[in-house]
Amino acid sequence: MRPEQAEPCRHNEDAARRRAIGDERRPLINLAYRLLGSLADAEDAVQEGYARWYALDPQRQNAIASPGAWLSTVVSRVCLDLLGSARVRRERYVGEWLPEPVPDAVEWPGRRSGAAADPADLVTLDESVDMAFLVVLDSMTPAERVAFLLHDVFRYPFTEIAEIVGRTPAACRQLASSARRRVGDSQPVTARPAVAQGVARARVVRDFKRAWEAQDIRALVELLDPSATATADGGGRVAATLKPVEGGAEIARSLVGLARRAGTLNLLERTVNGRPGLVATDRGKTVAVFAFEIADDRIQRLWAIRNPAKLRAWG
Image 1 (cartoon, one colour):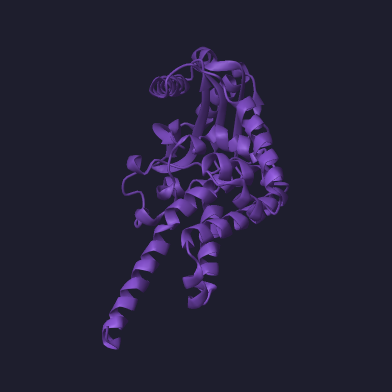
Image 2: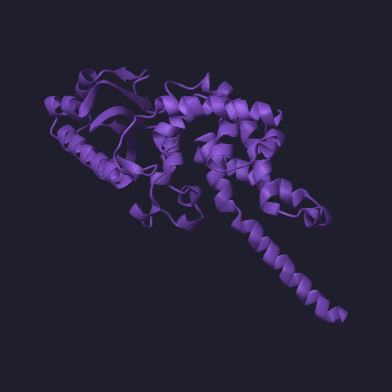
């Protein structure tokens, strides 16, 4: 091959490699969001991973057999560091902290220009982004969360996880086992198939919406488990209860009081992190997103995300 022929070949190879690197953004966003529970932080972590990649000289880049695996390792380490600093930030957070909810892009067509590039549209809505699951993950130590997610969700071998976490493979196996017990203890047991579960959940959410709109305390109490818990996240930026509300009857009274004060709120049935949920809008603007944990046709937990910084994907 003559030199003038080799140059276009190298150019084509470089372009294909750049496209392949760019295609890693979706899996990296999925990884980082599950690790952090925040779209904004996930985007920052992925951007940092790309920055470190492009800081390498071309010779070092070409020596890396799998750029995707390299990026995943770097982003996981960045997320581990962010999880450690997040615990410090949470101590200063006003009220309860909840994971950032993710919409189903199909339900929000044209919600913003350039939506195809938005991190929220890259998140795969499966059981590993269920709000109840993310809330349990947030109760884990950073090392537990990383070890568990990388192994049980993303199928990393413990030898690779050990390099990321900075512990032995045996220690990482123990971390994942401990995290697995927490998840197992928190999940309600049901014999219903997945499709039937989805239909039943949607029906409960629809009945809840109607009862709330009608300000029917009795109907709300029937839909709420007697030991239900409602948690709101306003981040100190909007009004929200600073502590969880305990008990179905107390939650029902609180919801009716909120409906009377709000007046103009419009409730929409929408998918929240892959599950039936509600979105409250005021004159077309999203002001709250509600996620539910439902078992035996009753609401066990209700999460209300009101912090405007966490609702940007719902525009």
